[in-house]
Length: 633
Image (cartoon, rainbow, N blue to C red):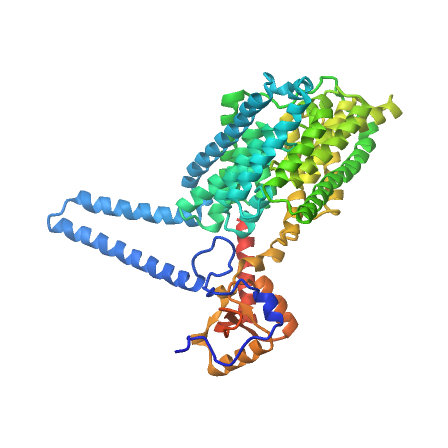
């Protein structure tokens, strides 16, 4: 007996459909939610109908229960039972509202407080874990002087520690991830845009452990990226427990990120704005209150451990001669943008080169971090300042404790070390390295500026501060939050004009040479197109099965026409998205596309329905409207 959607004697031609469907459709049947983005499990049509039916049933049950309660009172049932039933119904209604429109409800703020606190403790635990492991492997008492202490260690120890750390990282990532790649801030941004505000939990926990080992054993990267993703894992767990809608889950994700960033930097203002500017990529009013609450909660967690102190201490002799020095800071901003582009391009080039070498010599996935660790160890023998986060060297640059030549050499070596760490798939973030490179470059620029115009220039450390903010802002693509992070890291608000000028120009220049930021460029390299905005990526969130008209609802003439299109190679896999379907509509100039699955190479296709172009456009318009409503509510 034939399958319901199978028509004998017809096989698809190899053409447009093969490119659209690919092999993903083999042995897979499209559902109404198929391809609607990672993490979507329910169908749209059936889910909507079930939701309405469920809501009707619940409403009928509430009305029946209330009536029974009132009738029961007349029959001798306790009034307390009826009151309890009405109270339970009100709680259920409130819970449904909280799940669907959470961030606009006061009750949601308590969840935001809990999530921000949990993210703050996660960031604190990650930082303390790095410190404990560094003390164990390097034996340093004062980790603020780790680079200085490392100069006294035997060379073979400096070489062995990152090599063994890379080997451990490789084993962890090979065991717990499919691709051997550490999850980072880019994955959090992708989860917010395409995955209903959720990220991978298993891979996220493995990535956090890998990054902790990397930063403790000599890897040259930052701790903020892993902490942000770890916080996203926490918010994903909460969102899954309460079955939060996409908007509510995204707001919870913003709360977790804000709590983690504020705890890492003791920067509550910057933490909240980082979550809005970088992760959610909008400043909707409904999200601001819970995210601000979570950010403050994360800061309080950090201050309970470390007190209200800044990460860096600046010298007191920093007066800005605004009118005379403004052109110099404008030039610094433009040059910092170029330095940021070099840093980002170096990381991407090193990653491509590492993949080429790995394929050429057939290096197993677990060996790539070990090789990178060995190379880093060899560099650290001569330049121990590349070890770990690098805040000691950053602090020396901000206080002018480095000469011109050392600042230039350290900046170049740091770029190479960061590229090796990232290309070696060892883990860690990009923010702290960008702070260090920016401070070193700014100090070098300051030495030149004050040397050429000694009577019209202030302190060279002001240039180090402005350069630090300018390079970091260009790398993150976040001028607002980065400017505030620089202020809160240093406690110096008097040089705001210089930092703002440098940050704005560096970001404007760098964003035109990459896809807006390091994270969005990284996603573009994976063919995830978020940089251009919702109009570019929303098609990828709508599955063809979500807008498909089932075969049972099609006329016989439409079914025959579908088979004719399949023979011409014009079809779409049921698990594909509208991002693949729309180019086929434009190229083939047809009103609808057959939706099929391919059971096997020799088996005939199964026709499950068709996607009409008008339905696809309506679905895209609805997605745009929902996104606009969320971003402006």
